[in-house]
Amino acid sequence: MTRRKLAILVGIVIAIGAMALIFWPTSEVDDHAGEDDHAQEEAATETPEGVITLSEEQISEAGIQLASVRSGAAVELVFPATVAANPTSTARIDARASGVVRSVGKTLGDYVARGETVARIESADAAALASQVSAASARVSELSAAYERERRLFEENVTARQDLEAARANLSVARSELQRAQAAVAAAGVSGDGRSLAVTSPLAGRITAAPIVLGAFVDAGEELYRVVDPNGLQIEVALPSAEASRIQPGDEAVLVVGDGREIGARVRSVTPSLDPESRSATAVLSLSRGVPGLQPGAFLQARIRPSGEIDRDRIAVPEDAIQVVEGRDVVFVRTKTGFQARNVELGTRSAGQVTILSGLQKGWRIAVANAFLLKAELGKEGATHGH
Image 1: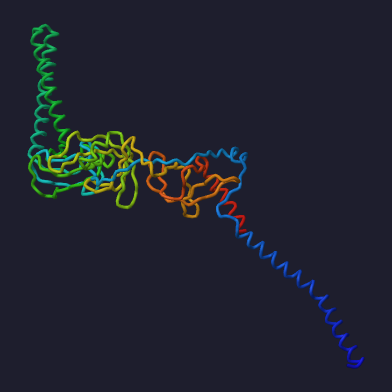
Image 2 (image 1 turned 90 degrees about the vertical axis):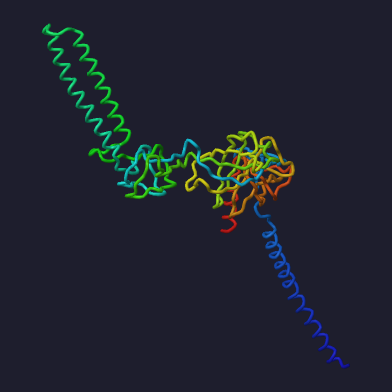
């Protein structure tokens, strides 16, 4: 190899080394920068969802109270039930006298007030009552004149006192007869022309039966309407013989209607003996409030909680501990740095307690009172992260 070729080769090696020194540090820095960016992204995604950081002092100032999760939930027995009308809240409206139905003021499903006229019957009894009032009124007028005449004669010393007293007694009897006749007319609702009797409702409620027909002839005592007070309904539950002894008056219950609504109730009474045919006892439940649309004869599901019976395999927490976050039922569990929102599956509710089917463990400490503040704080943090 000649010197010229050797010099050229050395120059190429030196040039390559110089280029390596120029570009190598920049590439290494860029690679590390990319790794740092990736690490930051991973750190941002590793933050646990639903975590709220709060100190002990902040928890105390917010008034958030804690409670330990313990096993033990109320036992519930499920039975079919039937809606029935309380004896004092249902009425059968019959015709008071024989006659022809001349007007119908109410039909099936209408609401009526107590004492409201729902129909009128043209009857001979109406005329008889009206005539009794007329006769009694005429009798009072006659005896009033006789009494006034006797009083003037007595003052003029023409007649004896006993004649005056007799006239006063006869007038008093006549007035009593007139009052009786007027009371009978008022009670029967006799019309002003004395031809028809009023049919009135003895209680306020809703008409559940209306066999009345306009223009039809009805006999005295024939049923025209049936009225039920919606606020006077009761629930009758058939209890199998094996379960009847576990149910006592005062036990709490929940009724589930067809549309999924839950209604609070309480056992009012339990029959002391079994029905000879069905071999079951009957528990009567009182509703905590009136339920619109509930009709006698409707079927429901009753969940009764026998007092003192506890299911040790289940967990129950106060209702205040349950919060709804983005459509999910959650409970805030205490952690070392604050709280963690945990999804839970809910069961039944009873006396301010909710049965937890899954999502919690015995011994965990959870937020109960003022847990809604944690829900609000979680919403703030979610909004900040989104922004």
